[in-house]
Image (cartoon, helix red, strand yellow):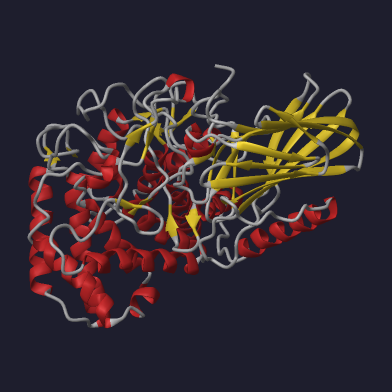
Length: 606
């Protein structure tokens, strides 16, 4: 177990095209390049022996570690305190401001001694293509080149390196005020070698990257009660966005388990229509219209690509460049995080039917009114055709928001979001006076509403339920008042909220549903869903239950990791589980914070 640090013991760095995880012990144990969804170069989190890692850490066995972000940036500081001195490692990736896809990406690892003397040890063991590709080593002093069939990796250190098979080691002793570093650059095989940086150049690069992030964050309009949490979340969303297209990946990793030792291990390095669409509102609330606009354009491109073809207008998820091909395979040679097998890359859920995505897509378009108003006539016609198609396609069983693998059902949430698609489409058409089948859309919207009220409601439990064939509750329905399907203080909704309190809430944390009561085709259990906890806060605030909403929100913050990041779930012992960090969790934190701030401000104004 010591071979695998807790999932939460990591910070995230990135350059807006890919990202790396750095543990609080100074180890890069996840890094894929040249994109988020590329094969890994360091993947010790999934297999300590075969995955590869890059360690830059103290030699002294008796150290205390502390990790933090440099204020308002994505620069990660890992501080080591020992009896002999205090040392720090600064990890960052210079963002590519051209927004052009590139195969060259650089991870900078700067070291310095703050007090006394400090000995740093370096071990670099890249393992290309998920550990499946062999590599050779060329070494010359402080410069090493790892060559594989597809990718070269250049390591340049300010201190000597020595060969360790096809890997390298090094060490450096620094006194107070002295600095050094190691720069790891990947590029296409045979690409031009980068120039060896000096300590002064690494320092200049640090300040340049710090300025980039701090200047970007100044756009934020957030003036609420939780600026540190909200701003860390929005920086995380930015880090998880592929700048060339504006596509947001669900998480930076693959294969991290929802239950340690279990099989619920998925690849989240893709763009879900659902996650990206809901991020639009969060980004607009904070003033980041450029990021919201970029995703809307990416989404519109996906609709245009399918225009005039048979079948669904949208797929559940795509690669960051819009490629719909995401074949799922198992890495049989990886043991998985603490034995959590299988390790999967690709995602078979891309081929599932998830009808809710149309509601989230229209929700994104309608939230950005200033963006929607600029849409071309052709763009509007593409959206209108998708809604015309949906009028005859919404009433079908599907796999639902949670991507169950136990068969299709009539999920209430899927119907709810189809209602949202027509409701928001009608609002857009009428607001901007665009041609549309208003009568057909209105008829479909009203029919869905009646169906949900009749078949999605359990008289026995006095609540809305997960699907029409049972009485299981589902936390996804916490979005009902936010999308204006029902008033937040309607007795029917308050009764549903009470039922969720009794069934899904555990000491303020929220389960998405009960797999035992509603089998999803997978073995094992899971933790509480952090997304659902923040949706619960949003619903409580809208219902006027402000003391409980604030208590739940602030208690949830105690489950963040040491640098303010969240994975997908919270386990039974308070540990973070699932892929890390998860965009859905961070965007729902922003949604909850802004809703709760408004409700608390309104209470003060009375």
